[in-house]
Image (cartoon, rainbow, N blue to C red):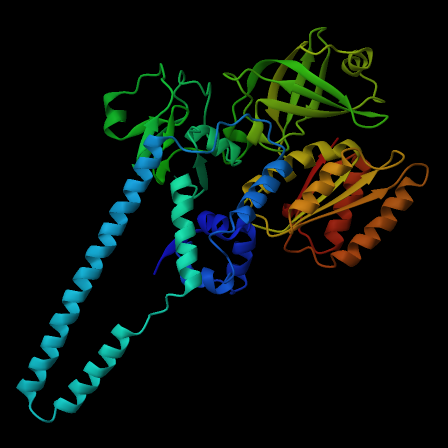
Length: 492
């Protein structure tokens, strides 16, 4: 029996982790201690071809584009040393498999000899039973035993993927991610959406320490932080300075909720200001590479510009790219910070970032279908949550309903449609609700939503927007059987 992790199985057949999890929950796919049998996988996906690399590349390209990661990542091709280590590991596994086959053949010969001896010792009465057993044994050995062409192709494809990317399993969370090329463990884990503990990300602070429980790593960056002899003896490494040579199991800490994220004060600068509608502008702020902002999707920060004007805003970007922060600002609001934007805050202008704060964060456990309801710039924290959810790839279904009060189409509408095009489990709907009939229109659209989702009891709902909208949306969710602990709100 060949067992694969859920992450590797999903990558192997070009499906999302959420899709495979849904099949496991529905009983269509059997798992063993969280892993999937290759036989089961080939039964469900019999037409996967090893040569069809375009399918895998297309899926990965769509996912990368839909996540809108801005991090400039190195080449995904491993270097010679890494390739040699991974091929060596596969060679060792092949040698071990051949040894086991040899031992199996020896055991079979001993069993035949034992059966013949039993027949001679027990006389004519035992002979028919022994002959029957020998005939069955011979039939079992000569027939091809449950190894199909599809299974061979999946196994070969798995070998290729194991050479190109190593898998990291994190204890105690159970999270998994892949390391491509010579990317560091920290970069790869953050890009996968996990809230790993770190500080400088440059080898100085030691906050990204992890214990290597199994596998081999390679140092790709020098670090000034000095590990103690006791830490070295326990196989402690810095994730920001090492990459994976082979599949790894690491013991490390991750942020579970907002209390695990420290308060930070980070100097940044205006990278770009981009109007996306007549009233909304997107402010992009860059942080230093050695002093990135740690935050959870959906949280807020305080921005202070070089004139001393301050504004609290939800971060609209995913934590998987903590170097580039995005904020959605309604220019019609009355605020000195906004006045500075309208007058033209220059690219490169200094911005002090203080935070993060807020409890409007994604609840990963237990997994639920996700329902997002957002109005106007309430889309900012919802966008962060959606990008994080798509990066983690754990939700079996994600539904986004946007309500907008401006004329035309909602801002960043094409982004939402690209998610819908890229992910089979993502749906998007937009409803215009301009004044003066806004409340009546919202109520009417909730009636339409009730037809789509008559029972929300198994969902997690995330609602963001003006206070009146948040209250009305929460009331709608309760009417659809959703309990209060599964309703998360944010007034924007």
